[in-house]
Length: 407
Length: 150
Ligand SMILES: Cc1ncc(COP(=O)(O)O)c(C=O)c1O
Image 1 (cartoon, each protein chain N blue to C red):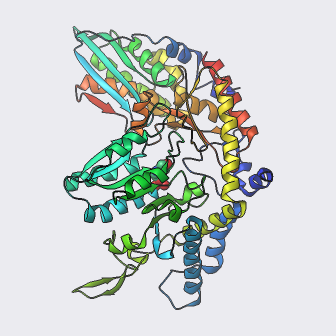
Image 2 (image 1 turned 180 degrees about the vertical axis):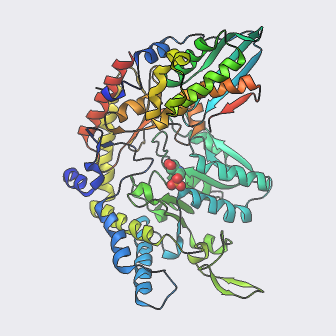
Image 3 (image 1 turned 60 degrees about the horizontal axis):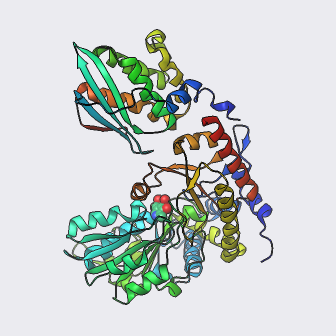
């Protein structure tokens, strides 16, 4: 690999020039949301300044241009995750809405009393609560595959929990609280052997790993734009065409219909059947620009660079006696969750902020994970393409200082 | 380093965080209430005993950040020996202080609690300081077994 163009990349993100108080910003809260490159910001202003109108509605020039941009972004998403067709790319608000869509549309038609839904013990609340609600509504049962103290899925237990009643396996691709990358190929193979549908929560994986939905052979894949250097308010649900065809609409209104009379409505085809109402047009265009930006750098280069960052940070963290890393999976993405002896994560967060360092302190919407590790919360540094080793030095130095102050 | 934080993390706060006062389980309390801050996972249990219309004993258990631990520790010190009305009045004062309503504060009554005034500059941390007092408030009103800052 040629050296990663970190200096050039940092130049592409205007917010990195901000100061927090007197300190340069060290933004390490990328798992919550990441910053936007100029190319994404420009794509949105360009649309609003030159090409904006509603999509799929008008014969006038601007509407045609806006529709081209919007559908062009769908094509980019399709290529980015290697879907077979743009019909399989549904624009939603984000991962949360994508999972809710599956629960309400696929779930209600395919899951009945006594059936089982299988998740893991490291899921984000958004991959727990929709299933709890569905289970309440249908009488289905939620099963949870356990994790070990490294924060890895115990695969044998997972396999053991797959039964004749399992109708859906919904698993996080990469954990936001631990960084663990799940063995999704093996998970999918185990489910496919019993003809069970698989949904992957790709919210964290998508910015770090090159994702090929055909190679994975998952049925559904959900992710959010805002964690992929794109605007918030936009996300993607990928679904295999045959499954999506068979599913009823999730919301109803304009755009999702072919023909309406007061007696009956004929639904529009894919993907529009699931896109009721005026979509978040500019955000979709921004997502397309983010994908272009990342593709130019190369997802494999990104994965290699971030692995280097994580190794560097992990090694430094291990040199701090009072620090305990939460989540030490063998296969791990660029997330360092940790606790400090006798110092609460909230205090760590405030102290580091005063040095310009943004980390997350809390339960990361994964309270069951916190319970498992018997901590109320963790501090989490999560890395992105624009982070440098020098920033990791600033972080580790800050941690050492605050340990001293608390002494 | 951390110069900007001197107003928030005063030495008294570190002291109470290291050595929280009245940090114990109480046998046969008259009231026992749990407080929870879902934002950061802080949990505390407050125990109270009354005698002759006064809070005769108060203690707590739980885990939280330095701000919340110091706040509950300081609170137990100041409310011991106070009547329920006096404790309620202190709660109002504390609330005014942490939300920046300076004109309503009686500095003498607040005493040592003044070290927590710095939180008002940190909106994300105000709840850490007020959790103890909301829990006490619920205990005095004998409302619920468990309260939450959300
Ligand atoms: C693993 C995981 N799943 C789901 C989500 C929810 O994503 P969003 O809030 O964008 O819908 C997140 C984001 O925090 C996440 O990290």
